[in-house]
Length: 449
Image 1 (spheres, rainbow, N blue to C red):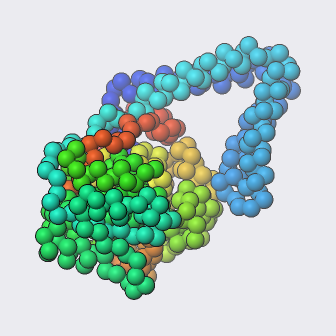
Image 2 (cartoon, rainbow, N blue to C red):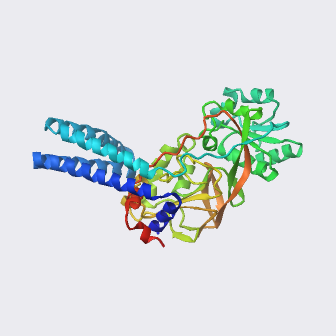
Image 3 (cartoon, one colour):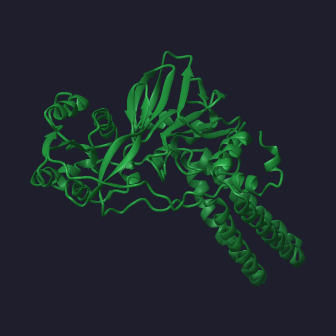
């Protein structure tokens, strides 16, 4: 199954040129390894064995760092830092500096060839922009607690009101229905909805904006601001986002994800990923918290028995499933990176199923694709034996009745952004041994089904 999915990705992004770059990269890696081994063996067999032990120890420490917590993880990190230094000293003391430098040059050339092979075909493309007149009656919702108090720190309310916006603050002790607040504003004549808050709040307002075909203004006042990041907005100074209220602004047409009738702008996560969202430290440090629950992902100890149905593929009992509004870059199995586009009209669906901790570590390192399903599709269904399951929706943990249906609303949302903004950087290649090997395979063309 994994081979079929990798071929499907290659049909969308591959080419003969990339295949030859991949073959050259693997050839150079082979030459570098053989050259290093020959240099060590001809000098002293004991040195060759010592180098082999260091290399094996390095990979073992890497596995231990991913698979365990506590003191074993700390010890593994120390080993990972010490072993490369020890290898350099070992080589220098035995007079192998020149052969090693030559091997380093070969490895550097291999890295360059692999980057050309793994470079996405759409690396230079961006979302089209459209000119649009400024709003006459903008309405902005602000959460003063979001992002550790960014609304007050950057004086966002006063700056928005100075630009003619009506501002509603979510500061009362009572629970406020954000979506209803946005709907009432549109009913009163608001021709733009803005939101300064986390991605979950932005998703609620985005759904209302799409339903009424009014533009959305995103203000990066949340903690992580992943939606703002993929729109190319400035995450360091959210006040710059208010330039969208002026003349020098443009509109983007982007997709919206829908899960069980609820809008999401980033992703919905299941299984071990959903367990990460429930962790107390997730909002402060998404990457670190995801790494913390990785040992449970490897052992398959967390989450209900899931079943994924997507694009004619059925995956039974995956440890984790990630459904995103447009796909993340290849090799990003946890939604920790960014999306180059938000207007493809497709969901990104990643499913991880590992039969052993070793296989799971290989998946996370990109060393294997076995047990990985990574596709794009307009719809995905996740079912379970439980009547409801925990789902991380844009970073918020929600109990959702099963089966859970995820879909996409293509280009349903108008987003007004400043013309002058940091932008989305070109997609960079992600190192992935399995994909590189697949690209280099001479038999892959004939193997397609």
